[in-house]
Length: 138
Image 1 (cartoon, helix red, strand yellow):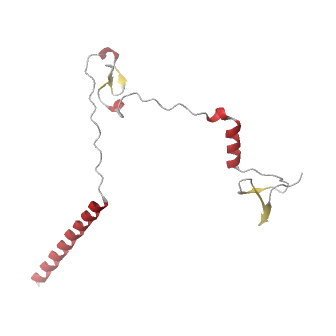
Image 2 (image 1 turned 120 degrees about the vertical axis):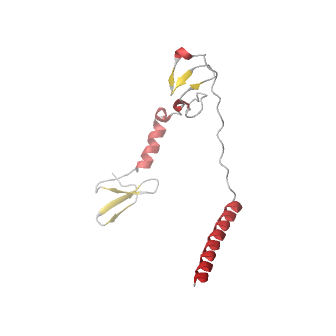
Image 3 (image 1 turned 60 degrees about the vertical axis):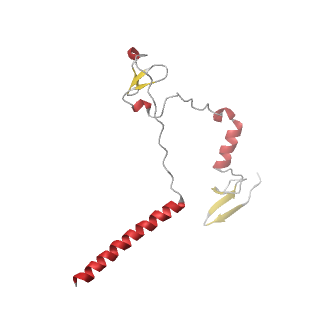
């Protein structure tokens, strides 16, 4: 067989170039080489059933963390105590009202700079007061 890809030897180790341009260390008799990345790409194109799009997770309509609540009643009237369904209590309680999460107030760059400036002013004022107290004592 005839060698088809460029190679070089460095410190006694032979390297050959893959089709994508990466060099891989090979043995003395190697004629051709394919890197791991190219192998993965080829595998995925030959066997599409291996990487079919999986169906997205369906939401249950319940809020996040519902299974940690001491008691949660969904819209259908199912009652849950710490995530465990209580079928004997179905329909006996009103649905749990979910409070929307409070969004964190984002400070603007100006507000951050002003707050930093105020903090520096406070520190300087304290230092100045200490210095004045030391001078008065002497």
